[in-house]
Length: 174
Image (tube, rainbow, N blue to C red):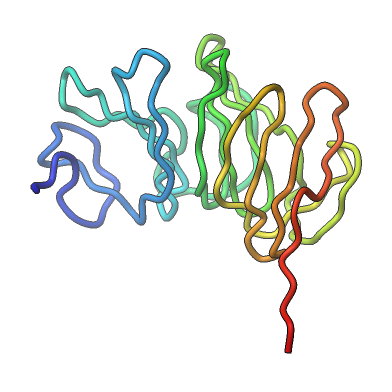
């Protein structure tokens, strides 16, 4: 086994042996499998690892700046991206500190699917739901499943009804 991408802690792009990461968490393949997208948590960025060119490029985030700002990908800010998956349209779905983002790679725009810039727990419509450190994320049949880590729940985001609900609950028995 050997390292393909990364040369220690940092935020630099470039060839596979010189690029750096700051606590990379989630990985997702592009639909054509030419790129691995990385949720680079401490750099508050999303990176593309080009498997043909063997190089890294930041597609979202800059200068380790965190926050909440949506729009063009190169101007979008997010805080602590962790989970990442790709839907059937080729959009990246990303979990952050308390929100779920949609990154449309065709239009080069970001939007927030659900969540707010505060942590908490609440099911309901997309504009009402609260999360606390959502992490793992998968997309299946028009539903986004999220591991809402600090709430100890699996949440389901139904894109057809715009409703967030609790899919599974973890109980601590003492």
